[in-house]
Length: 464
Image (cartoon, rainbow, N blue to C red; front, side, top):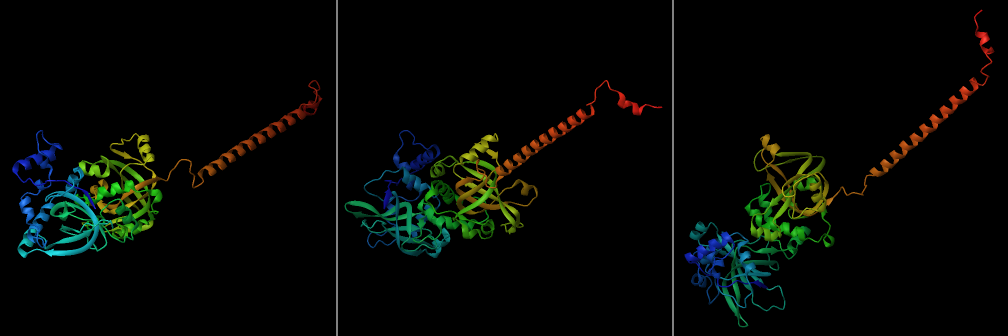
């Protein structure tokens, strides 16, 4: 149930804040520095151990709604990966204190909404937050339930669902001589529904992706990639790279018009599409946390074209006139690593694998539909038409449809037949030529059969 701890996170002093600032800038502790500066509490200015002690009443365990709301407000200002980073650096400890950062997972029990006073709601711009009671997922684990206090929960969160979270301990309890967390303040919960019908969501959840974040992508439909995407974009890239194709259900072969006309229906789904590549770009990842998430310092974006046949589709845009797709449509594919055939194609075209390369290949893609996104396009910018819109797929694999040695349309057979026909024509020409030469030779032989000295045959042609 409990995975990682970090202890003694309570240093709100100015010197600690300076030390923390240096640590975040350099990634190293200054010589003679103190380990406490790595604490999450240092990021939550205004909170110390004394203040944390007043958040949960030690008698009836009732929360101080006002103080909890302010703490959650502080946590929400942090990048969602910040506390995870502290938890990853920690070593497990036998007990827990207020202010420690811990990670927890379990099964949802009770979910309650706690309302703020009108005055505080106006200041914090929220009317409530939630208390989620979670139980150990292990039947043999007899630890009492833990309370998670969080600003928002997935709309469909229900008892029996699985959740995980990383947060700051605001209450502890004694169990078998050790102090373990009784309540955490967290910035978000990662959610896995008890019953997932969507195959793509099943695969993503199995790789630790927060399905609540996946479902929230519909809110950014047809918008550019933005900071709000980071907490699901990079985890999905990492998850796609780990999907075991051989043991996973087949990707759903999706008609492009279905994807373009009903994008919300397919978000996060496991799909299969055919396309033709146009350009491959290596995208550097600057953020160290995101690099760790995908275990790489870059990913690749493949710009491609998909076929629509005779279908014409008009896509509405947030601003400007609709975008019309006739016969073809643009498609963006993101993948952690290029397959060998595309890597080799870039080298064959003297392209730079570290930058941008123009490569044309027919491909098939198995991956997760991310969402429709908008992006700058040179042609549309020249025409003053605004941003382009198209599907973004996070690929688990890219398949080469131009594999050497495969001949699905019988091109080699046609070549063999043509070659045989030419050879046959050459043979016929040779036989015909030889026959003509033989006939000419016989004619000349008959004409010259008389002796040369006998000239009497000319007498008939002598003039009188």
